[in-house]
Amino acid sequence: MRFSTAGTIAACIAAASAFKDTSPFLLFSNQDIWASQEAGQTERLSDLNQIDSASSVTTSLINSLVCLPVDTLLIVVQPDANAADYTTKAAAPHLRKALKTSVNDGPVYVGLNVAEVVGAVDVDSLQTAVEASCGFEFQKVEAYGEDGVSKIDFTPVSDKESATVGIRVDLQPLSNEPAQRVRQVAYHDIILQEVLAQFKGRSYAVLFATTPVNSKAPASVVHDSVSDVPHYKPEFQEPLHSEIKRQIGAVRRADGGSKVDTRPLFEKYQFFTPGIFMGLMVTILLVAILSVGVKAIAGLEVPYAAFEKEMGPAAQKKVQ
Image 1 (tube, rainbow, N blue to C red):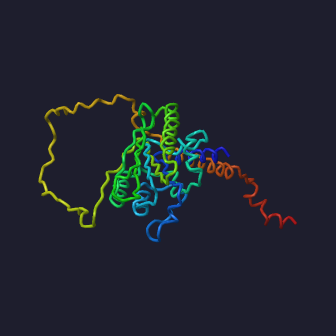
Image 2 (image 1 turned 135 degrees about the horizontal axis):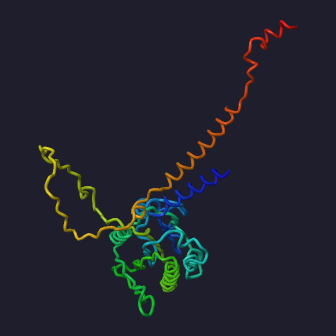
């Protein structure tokens, strides 16, 4: 029983280590835009995915969400976040409310809800694709002003009469300190509520993208056609004919100016990984089973009289 419990704990440790570089992603609107679009243009994405890759989410959004029929498209980027920051009931109450009721007290339609996105969603490429396809530019809103969130100008940038207004809010990265991290999530939740409060009376769609801790968003590359994509050309150098010689001269220290890492060995490297831990637990379990079997075999006793000729079955028949 103890071995089974230890094995379960080891599996949980490995699972937690595997998903530490993930973050959530949300897409919702106060309009059922996925049902109102014509066939072939926009389709409703999966309402809830437990885990998905950032490249898959980015590709799905670029291919499916083009020219949304809403008045306002909001992109919110939260760096250095993970799903654990939003799992508790006390975390981000305004975001939870925004997923249930719109600012106009109407229903909310969720287009995409991924709890664990592996990697960083390429928001810049998504924004560039939307701007190129729909003909409008995003305006950045200052979220940390003295008077709070700045007032949004809903005047369309393009010449179209009912053009969509694109708005982007870049939040500050979350701190590594747990207490400060909780306060930042609560403060950013208030910022989101103040931004959405200005959307009253308008149709809107919100893309809430987060990036994992210490991750860098991939470089945005947008190609107009297949011919613009660069092709790989291998380059081979001439073979070098050199003799292996022992280096006798003194080696000069590189002037890189890098600091020498003086940390202990076990702080620099991780020797006791979850895989090794699970392997040791399985090995101990197998050794325990093997020891029980060996003890059982060693405990078998056969009397010496069974091997004597006079006491064998033939001798007993003669006596009778």
